[in-house]
Image (cartoon, rainbow, N blue to C red):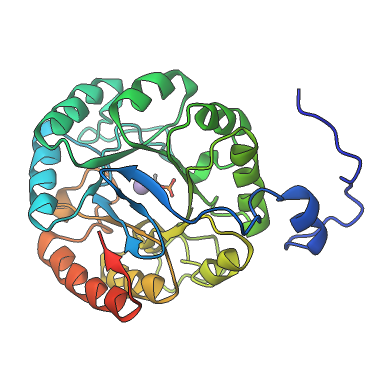
Length: 301
Ligand code: PEP
Ligand code: MN
């Protein structure tokens, strides 16, 4: 049971954040005394100076793909890798070529960890029953857009004290996102990273682009909180040619990190084959991002 507070009311319900919200409803989130650094491993993490570039295929399709991707980014001196073995999909039907690794993928994650012990691994958690095993085998848990307000999942993930990435729901305001973040902070975990990943908009300028990256949310969120805010242009645009400009724009807008999907053969990606960058495109993007980060006195890690 949560305690009750006398100063909480819903007399002025709004879509956007009010001074009343800041003083009463997102007190922890909006506390600017909160330290900005979130260390994950080997002194690497989120800070004013460093920009983690989280990359990887959409899903961990095989051990072979995982190991070759880890090798690829290791050579580029990158450290943050997606190893998603659970993939919530809009429709319940799976094609013959697509199979989610599921819990068996833990063995692949263990092997990637064994061969690349300094790599920081990120995996989405979709069910409470996987919390324990994922916490033991990855470094950051991701709470996906569809679970942003799954408060029970938020609470248990918070209690695990694992670093968490909370993705903004594609239909939610930043008020809703910060409300969900407050749930996590209230349960005692402040290793929390927020993620903008695109929202529903009347026009997205291409029939294959389901969402629109809300770049404006980055400075808007920074106005209110010190929590890092990262950007995922891959899931927003669904369209590889737009990922590069949107990634650059995100860093220029002050994003504290990026999630970029990449795949050695994008057209063979088992999920969303239009959105991953191939290795050459990814390397080119990295060169540009380094320049943009440097201009801002920051560094891609
Ligand atoms: C993902 O990062 O793989 C993912 C499913 O993201 P989202 O929850 O933003 O759709
Ligand atoms: Mn996806």
